[in-house]
Length: 158
Ligand code: FES
Image (cartoon, rainbow, N blue to C red):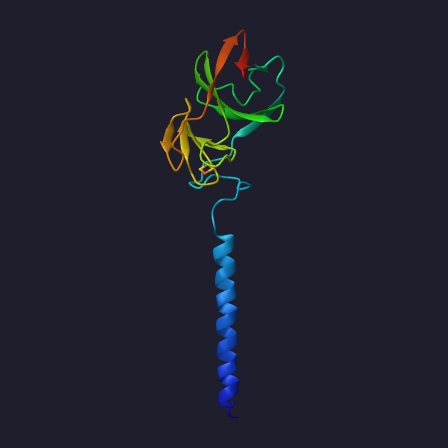
């Protein structure tokens, strides 16, 4: 049985449109920039989250063995009173605390590995002291004073 020419042509046009739509869908879903991604653009793992409260401009965290911040070299995303902070355990008795809001376009920085924080939106990377290691961000993360005494970490947010 012969397939009429116009039928084959219609089939090809329809197929092309279908493939184009599928390619567009792939391109759209393949775009970066989703802040709900479980990992950063380079695959860094998400930070553990700690919920806390700001009281008198300070956050107080007990650092015991069950804390995600117990080990030197660890870090966590601390959500407190509607604000987000990146806290890292940098030495035996030293910690750093930074705003978690990326200086590029204000996404929440939420992934970490090898002493490097990464923004899930466009891949900016910061050191544990807040310095930009990789753009597009050009400004450091604001840091806050920390004090660690008797296993209690106090972060002055004010
Ligand atoms: S908002 Fe963080 S890299 Fe763009």
